[in-house]
Length: 190
Ligand SMILES: [Zn+2]
Ligand SMILES: [Zn+2]
Image (tube, rainbow, N blue to C red):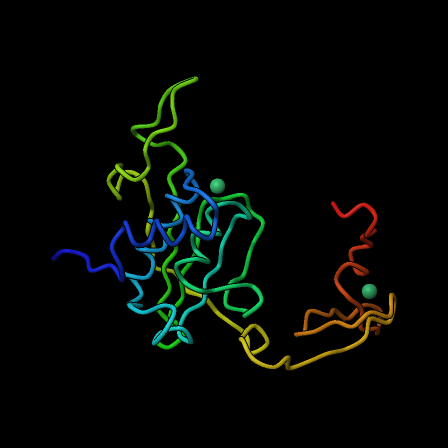
């Protein structure tokens, strides 16, 4: 059976291009990843009828994330996009209504990739199965990870700053934030 994507590639790539300001390899890959992911979890109208059913987990803070934002409407500010800084061209698409989740990642070694000093391949032309790994996954979300009002807000006993959404930790009987727990110095973020 032929796959029914929520929109055709041309429409999708144009939308992604408009948000990102151009079409690059990450935008092409992110666009295709989104089309595959939404098809597999049964989302057909991500920005309208299905907008409350979708959450995405992006594993890279690069161009690819813009394509996913443009096509899904998911954003960190809506709590519908979680960004993990793993440096991997991969994303998980979760249907909040059915619980079905699929992770779409790009293969590290691609069949048709140019060799040393070779040109960047046209990722829009490479068959899906040569480019991506698509796997059903389980995502367990806590109530404090969901969109909506914050369920919890506390003050860090060490730095005095507020901490939302149960991201605080208990240490030596005190409630503190993760950076304080990890002795992070904000003037040297890394
Ligand atoms: Zn780009
Ligand atoms: Zn703190």
